[in-house]
Length: 300
Ligand code: TA6
Image (cartoon, rainbow, N blue to C red):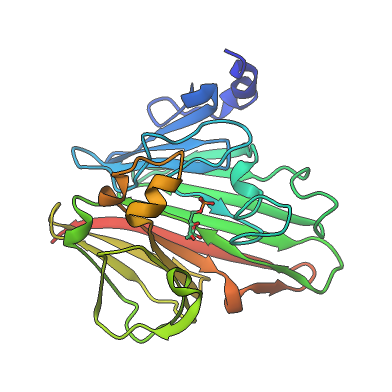
C-alpha cells in the first residue's frame, strides 16, 4: 500500500475507459491504457512499457515471469529506456539510470481515432551533478500500433553533451527456433558473444540457435521479426536511430540471470533501436534529439 501516494499526484491524468492508474507489481504505480484495438501497460518506474498487445492476440512485448519490480532494479522485459549510456560503466548501473528512475506523468491525450498518448518526464534529480543539464521526455502513443519517442534536449551550455540512447525492446515469439530477423543484411556489427569482434551480416535472415548479442551500426532501416510459429511478423520501424541491437541470451546466460526464467529464452528476442557505440550522439546546446520507434504486427 506504500505507493498509493505515488499514484495520487497523477490521478488527474486518468481518462475514463482509456487511461487508468493502478497499483502494479511490487506496489509500483502502473498505467493501463486501452485503445479501440489494443491494450498497453506502463510503469512510472523507468517509464517502462511492460505490455502491448492487439485485442485477442498474443502479446507483442515479452515480460519475464521472474522480473523484479523494485525501486532500484530494472524491469526484465517490455521496453527498458536506456539512457544516457548503453552497456557497462565503471561504478554505475548497467545501461544508464533512466530505467531505474521514477518518471513523472505530465500529460495524457485521448486521440480522436480511438487511442491515447501519454507524456512522461525524467525528473531533474536523475543524473544531477554527473551530467550536463538536459531534459528528457518520453511519449507513448497507443493505437493499433505502439509508438514511443525519447526526446532529449541539451539545456546546458556544454557543447559536448554526448550520450547513448536505446529502446531495448523485448518481443514475444512462439518458438525462437522458428524465428527469422530481416533487415540487417550487409550491416557491420560488434559481436559481444565473440569478444566484440567486428563483423558484417551476410545472410538475408538472422536465425537464432545459440547466444546472439550483436550491435549493428550505421543502420537506420526497419527490422522485421518473422515468427513462423505464431504466424505473424512484428515490424520495428524507427527514426533518429543508427544502431540496432539483436539479443537472445540462450541457455547459459539465461541461467545466470536471477530475474529471467531458465527456459524463457525460447519465447523472446530483443530487437533494440537507438544510438550506441560509434553511433553515440553529441547534442549542441539548446538542441534536441528524437528517437522514435513504432511497433506493429501483421499476419504472415
Ligand atoms: O542489449 C543487449 C545487452 O547489452 C546484453 O549484452 C545483455 O547484457 C542485455 O543487454 C541485458 O542487460 P541487463 O543489464 O538488462 O541485464
